[in-house]
Image (cartoon, rainbow, N blue to C red; front, side, top):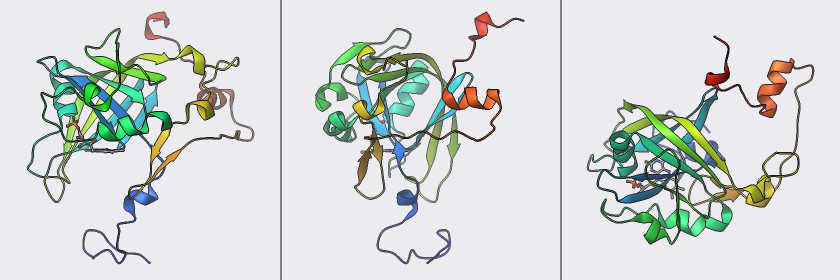
Length: 226
Ligand SMILES: Cc1cc2nc3c(=O)[nH]c(=O)nc-3n(C[C@H](O)[C@H](O)[C@H](O)COP(=O)(O)O)c2cc1C
């Protein structure tokens, strides 16, 4: 089957679009409002963009009445947002944090997770999550959709600090992903968890390509020769 979503009705009872873009990592994002209220929400329209420097993005749909999401407003107003890795063990808290609560309600408390302090960003990290990025807000790109809810704020940020819990770091220095079991968003009401990984290397890749793929750290700007 095929169809043109802009001009033809979907021939299936559920749109296949989101179910084709799987698995999506979850941007479980914490922010704080100008008034100091802690906010937490999952965003599966979330990705890394590049690694030198590390940059990320998330896309927030507007509410049907045209209001913008609190995460976007807080990131713009404070200049920061924080990514927390969503795990299978934390799935219920991730789900509860998606509830549309009034901006004055503390979503860490509602989701039943503890706050850990950030180093650079205002606001907090989810203490139970094993990995965090403190992200400096860069810009918002607004893309109009066919409806208020289809209209998105694409928010870009630069990762200024990376936290990884010591107990998920293997002797090799790599992260123990099967132990963490990151949560991924699928289509419909479905989720997946990563329980196993496997390796593949590009044949005859250049050493620069190998370094990028394996994740060799880049030189910080302050150490680069001018
Ligand atoms: C797993 C999951 C992924 C979600 N991904 C998105 C997303 O990518 N964009 C979005 O606008 N809303 C997404 N939502 C809905 C938001 O989490 C929800 O609207 C939330 O209340 C927004 O909170 P905020 O206004 O505090 O930012 C998602 C919900 C769940 C459960």
